[in-house]
Length: 288
Length: 251
Image (cartoon, rainbow over all chains, first blue to last red; front, side, top):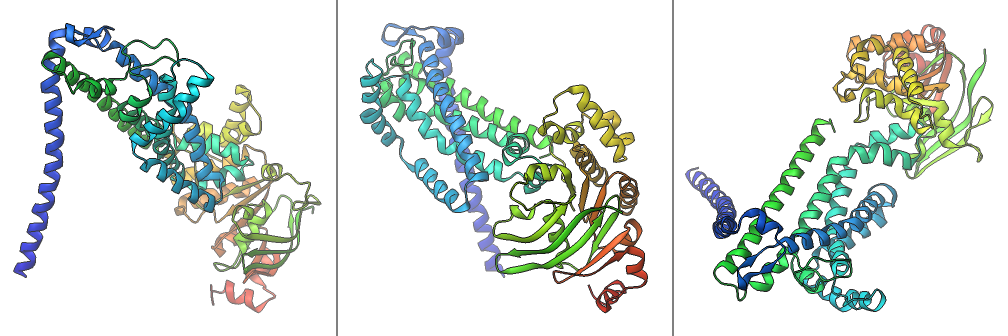
């Protein structure tokens, strides 16, 4: 009896310690990012830091405007094609394909999610970059290469979460809609997708978060020049690449500027997560 | 009296299991026909052959013929969408779509191509009036339908069916999830609807069948054992099994 009680107590303590450790890690990282980044942000001014296009850290010019635009350009152009493709794949898997085929597809998507990002980057560098160079011109290392590689990388997130959202829609909605004389496609577009809306928005925002935070693959295929891209074929540098490229030799204010870049990314991701929870909440209030 | 629906030798198979063993029945226009029988007797399965909803379940095979106004609904040239527009269905559990009351009712007309706002407004109002729901919801037709009570939701589902202007309405135990007051409102509504529609209702509840229907069919183990005027069937059953069932000896 007594031993049981001690065991139980031990397990409880173990769980508490593990949970506190992960929470503590998050708190420390957050604190550290802000602690290292904020002084420089204060010195340069947030507006100037975010919008100044001149990044010349060794000469005391800290503007990440070009990288902010670079991150947005690569992320948005990857979403433009991967969101429709991902949602349509999810619809196919949840509603149209026979279960067997859907199961195979689901395995393949899982596989896609498990490939390390450096492998995607390598694939992009060896296959996509030369293709862009040969067929479309430019050096190949470009916004477009980043958009293609990133788009593939976030497909699993978009597909899996959208598919779960569609599967969670009660079967009765479909049966009722069909019984009213709707076709299968009308039922999907007018009842099932609207009912799954908040889940699909979550899928897109999480995909967006993953895209904006991705570093290695983007670094390998985008060329990394810190200027504003003037077309899809121009090279571009993202905020994440900026940190990786320069952290090896940065010191003093330069290093602080890299941390400040991290702070900006961090705030961005927090805003995205808030957007997700708000959209989920809106979904439950609709009564689904 | 005009025969609206006629079935001949209707058999339904779910993979290896035969759910219906040849059903022959005549269903009369502007009458309420009740189908009764114990669980698993095939009454719901038969109901779903009339709007071809069984086809949604993989591995289902239907044989035989069902005529709606002398046209075989299982013949190759029948469009299932057009059939389901003519034969509406109300399910056991009211399932309102996650949208406003108005949008729920307007759903059917919209998918069938009506876009005119004024026309939709009038269809929605007419359907809600016909379903005895208008008075209760007219102030909040643009509010989410999920906020209605169970009984109101079931009448909303009926309004949604009426909005498509069907000729036949199938009801699959429509009152089984409702409280007694909502049930009596629904039964009253069924009595009013038969002026304009042909109604086939599956029910577990024999008192309900006796109250609302003009004709009653008794199903057992996938067969139609007896079919006649409701009064006759309940007062003077011809078959011993019918008598056993309605007197509560099994089921």
